[in-house]
Image: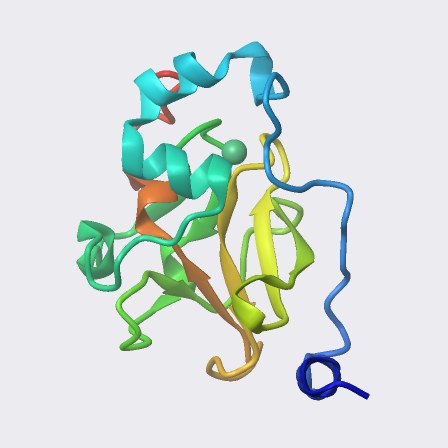
Length: 169
Ligand SMILES: [Zn+2]
């Protein structure tokens, strides 16, 4: 067994077994961007950083998102398609520099195995548009024990009582 395979098998064994892997969605391919919009239209709507996180699976710099410190009641929605992903009641300060949550809103995200950067991690993305949001780890607080580590650039915060924005807002 090669060293890399050995390391991968160790990481894979350490992953929580209850996560359902979904490999149907991957990086957005050229000409297959969601909701009928082109690459250029999404780029114009989202800007460089959010576009590269959502549709190229980039990771923003730690401590770079103003949503790290967002502590109001409300909902964190997908910046691209506006699907509600996390309630503020599940947000906690993980100290990692990325907005962190204990649980997503049921059905809002799907997971898949991510083997980039010489690691096996569990990536998750918005169910509606496929946009990459972050990675989920099993070192979160009880009761879920999960840390949904999300790029702030892939999210938009809607304070409680404010209207939900439409795509493009
Ligand atoms: Zn979305």
